[in-house]
Image 1: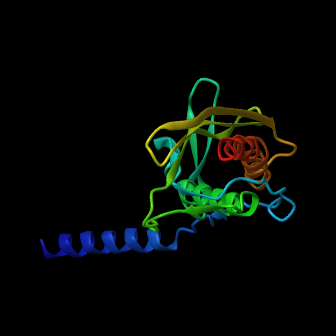
Image 2: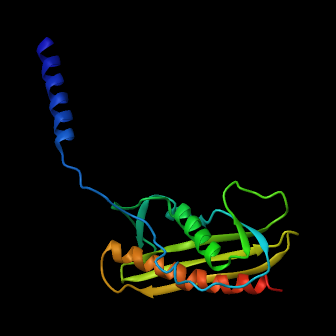
Image 3: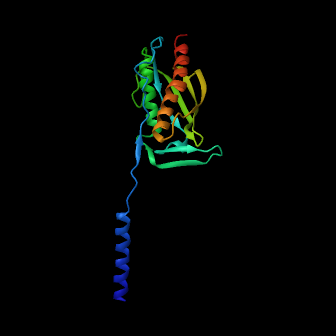
Length: 198
């Protein structure tokens, strides 16, 4: 009986040592970048205060894995190509930075920083933010501006499809970034500027 315990113990230790010795594949982490921030054009508006609510992403996008989605709706989560920061946090932070730059007469509040006076709200929801297996970027969702009085001032949807110029996760992340800023935020900035000039 004592010999059986020793054999069992040796087997368990061998298994644990083998598991520890198995090489792990290193992961790559990516951040969205606003490479066009410095050359963005300013938009004149009246002075306002707006609270940018945290951008809400669909649940399948909420993890740290970068996802690919097929036309049939199969979701592939990369285990080795990850967001260095949650997608929601990145989009919120970068969107606020862009808006502070291009809409300078609007005081933008994010997170828990709130002024004593009433502010308008900007809500952005993202349903899709991925590439498919055919090399097409998909970004879609909706946004609304709610006035300080609680009335809907503006709203719209966005649905962007862009072809990737080259293969690879780095190229995909760069294309997602460009599409977010150029094709989603730039038109949104124009509409927000129009609303806050009325």
